[in-house]
Each structure stands twice: as structure tokens, then as C-alpha cells.
Amino acid sequence: MAIATKKSGRKAGQDSEERIRARNEAAILEAALDLFSRKGFDGARMAEVAEQSGLPKANVYYYFPAKEDIYRALIDRLIASWDTALEELQPERDPAEAIAAYIRAKLDYSRGFAAQSKLFANEILSGAKFLDRAGRRHVQEATRAKARVIEGWIADGRMVPIDIPHFFIMLWSTTQFYADFDVLACDALETAKLTKKDYDAAAEAICALVLRGCGLSPVIQST
Amino acid sequence: MAIATKKSGRKAGQDSEERIRARNEAAILEAALDLFSRKGFDGARMAEVAEQSGLPKANVYYYFPAKEDIYRALIDRLIASWDTALEELQPERDPAEAIAAYIRAKLDYSRGFAAQSKLFANEILSGAKFLDRAGRRHVQEATRAKARVIEGWIADGRMVPIDIPHFFIMLWSTTQFYADFDVLACDALETAKLTKKDYDAAAEAICALVLRGCGLSPVIQST
DNA sequence: GTCTATATTTTGATAGAC
DNA sequence: GTCTATCAAAATATAGAC
Picture 1: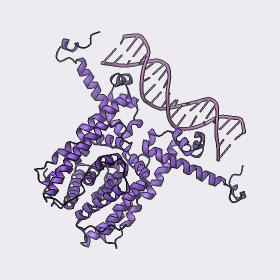
Picture 2: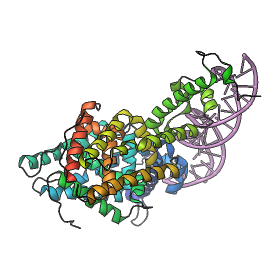
Picture 3: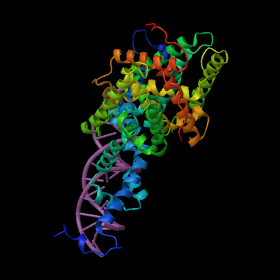
Picture 4: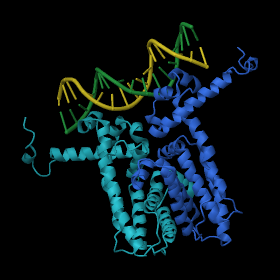
């Protein structure tokens, strides 16, 4: 049976089969992201994914042949957004301003995409068995490129010499902490739930310490 | 049947029932720590725990009535060691020296007790459902007490004013990162496995940045 | 593409002999 | 205290009608 050229026979306004597919896949991925990020791969149940995406379980399997396929699809998406914040580190920018912008961008990601962040943390913590070589190399290359930017700033005497890989680790760990270990952050900040104010305070505190630590004076917050 | 006073009738050298119990429980907890830390609560299988501890599965259930009991026993142990490093922060010490010692103690813990660290990370990431109020309050109180030490240093003009809760978060996240997200750390440092040298470099880099960030000059490494 | 009913496998937990 | 055989409850995945 010819299934390839079916779409063109549809009227506008009516849901084409591709639109249905897109919508259902999106609903499944959204539900799965929430569940996997909160309960991990093994803890999340396919029945829950189905319920939360508003589809019968069999339909979920119609779109994704196995639980693992949903998880993989989510992991693949993560890689794309992981290094977005790195774009802030442009060689022609003022180092203090660029690093501060990077820290704020990472914290914005933590706050706005906490589920993605947790999913990523879970995957890494479990040994990164699904994050393939390609994805990890991508992260590695992106980081290496930006390490050269910082090297340049140091060579130009615009900031104190630092250990760049460990510097990146400090920034990653600190900014991700608020999303991944929000429970601990809440305890430390003596609050029930992290608010925008808490994230702003975090940005200020991290920028202050890091910039001073790099021999750069703190800049005024831009937003 | 009187089971209470059975132990005293044994000869020395022979395994008493209590020694057997102690040995088996230890074997189970050791295996469980390894498995739970790598695979999480749901990912670890009781059959694996049994195999890895060298006991038949039924014996594991003889000592621990349920999977959850093993997990709880491990979590309870964690709390005890969590705040050990905080002891380095004594008010009469030199702030730079004390903070550097704290960072090194935390990194030593990361390196020497990576499984415990990962188990803790996994538990927090999953919403801290087993870590009870008592445990969390314990951590909170210990941290609060040490926050006052730092407050004192700031009041005495011995270090620049900083946001103390966020400062603790920075130290926790950075030092734990090497144990919890070792896969990422390896990628960043372009190595296959973290060595003592890597941890020493981490200590140096973190101390340099943090101490300078606090307005304290770096101290010479003590070990 | 949708959905009910069901198959299959896994796995936490137990019975009961030694 | 030890251990084999087994249960019962999930949970992943599929069959097959619509």
C-alpha cells in the first residue's frame, strides 16, 4: 500500500496525519521528560507516560517501539541546547562581561529548563550509557573552542592565569546545582521553593566570587 | 525459645552468630552501595545485590526484609559523614587556611568515597524521598553553625563580605562534581579516569579562585 | 491512527526443608 | 542461619479489532 504520498490530498485546516504524529510525539516526549527527569529511566513507568500524555499505552508504543527510544530521543535533544550559553564567550567581548553573561545564561537555563538539566544529570550520574560518543565529543569540542577564547584573554593580560578546564567545571557545577539539587539549595537558602529572586542572588554571588577570583572587577547586572 | 542469651556459650575463635550477622550485613551493604550508587534505587536489582555480596537472594531478605531497608540503612550512614569536612572551619583558624582545608577535605571525600557521594547525589536528584526530615535538618544545622564562623571572619574584616549560603553551594557543587559527574570531568580534563593528580589540580584551581574571590591570598598547599 | 485485552518477562518477596 | 524452588505483582511490550 502506498503510504508515501497521502498527505497532499488533505484540505488545509484539517489535521494531516503528519500533524497528528507531530502533536502526539510531542505530547509523549513532554510527559516522558517530566517523568524521566524526576524518577530516572528505571523509575518512570510507561503507563505513567501514557496517562500523562493523554494517550493509551498502545499508542505510545505505536510512536516509540520501546521505552529506550523515548529516552534516547530526549537525550539527543539535550545535546543541542547544552552549549548554547557558551556563545556568550566571544573573544572581542570584555572578559568580565562575557563570563558574567555566561553564568547568567547557565542559571537561566537551570531555572527555565530544570527538567532537562535533571535528565542530563541523571544520565551522567548513571554513567552516560545512552549519551553516545558523538554527543560527548560535541560538548568537548565546543568547550575546547571556548577554552581558547579564555586563553586569549589571559595571554593578552586581560585576566589572571587560571586552570581553564577546572574553571569550566566550577561554572558548570555551580550553575547546574540549583536545578539538579534544588532540594539541597532550598535547605541551604532556607526556602521552600527557589524563586527568580534566589536565582538572581545566585548570579550575583557567583559572579562576584568568580570575577574577583579571575582578577576581574564585578560588572553591573545588565537585566 | 530463648534467643537472647545464646552468644555467651561460644568459644573464642569460632564465628559467633553475631559475627556472622555483622559480616553478612556488611557484605550486603557494600554490594548495595556499589549498585545503588551506579544504577539508582530502581535500577539496582536484588538479584545483583545477592550475587555481588556472595549470598543467596533469600539470605539477603533474611537480613533486610525489603529492598528499601537496605537503601535506608545506606542513606542513614551517609548523613553521619556528610558534614565531617565542615570541622575544618574553626573560628580561631586563619580563614584562608581553613577554607582551603575544607575544600581539600571535600575533594578527598569525593575521591575516596565516590560511591557514597553518587548515592547521595542520586537521592537528592530524585527528590530526597528517603532522606528524612531529621537527616536534612542535621545537614542544615551543621551548615548554619559554620555559616556563623564565616560571618565572624567577615565581621572581623578578615575576609570580604560574601553571600554565605551561595558560597557553600559553590563549594559543595564544585567539589562533589568530580565524584558525581566524573564522566563529564574526564571529558573536560581529556583523561580516561580521574587520578590523584587530577584531584590535586582541582584543589589548587578551586582554592586559587575561591580564596582570591574572598579577598584572601592563596596559601601554600599543606600536603 | 486508535484502543482494549492480553501475552511475556522481570523482579521483589516468601515458603519451607535443612 | 542457609538455600532451592516458587509465588504474586508489576511492568514492558504486542495482538488484533476498529
